[in-house]
Length: 251
Image (cartoon, rainbow, N blue to C red; front, side, top):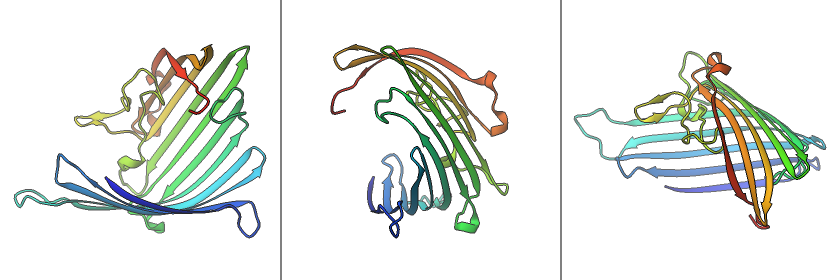
């Protein structure tokens, strides 16, 4: 894998507290087990602003072009030469009252993000997706109680099928602990294929042990579903366990 990325940032816009970001990238992936090569290129533009002390909004546009081809096609087999263009309009709102984003003890984080892709904005695929997240932290003596909920939905438009890069995946330490990475939801003979909906619920109890070491007990539940209409609380997969964390002054 080889790639290059360029980006520029402007903290204000005509004196207004509006942050602007522009980036571009080009990347090539060569697969050692096959003759396939994927070339990726893209550009993105985003603006962010704080409309209240704890409330931020952002919006932007992203365009990606992925070209996958066979460097040595077999004349007896169908050749692979696919180009996929994905253009997206993005909008997000974040309400954040956490005391420390990296080591939160108290506070609330609410976020909502919407993505729309259509041929009208230069995309070869049509879909709309939404992700809502909520995190709540509360201290009790030397213990921190942390709760989280995530709900994601995505729907393909105009009779198309939702492309893999826009599907949801779940399972593993960042969603439902104790399960294989991306082990939830629909599978095929190659592994997880993702789905059009995600629901994850988490509860943690964090407590100090000694020096830089902390303990955590967790109770997770979640799953990945084919479509938003298939979401069913009875199909959630539960997991419980404990962990050890190291919180140093530098990492």
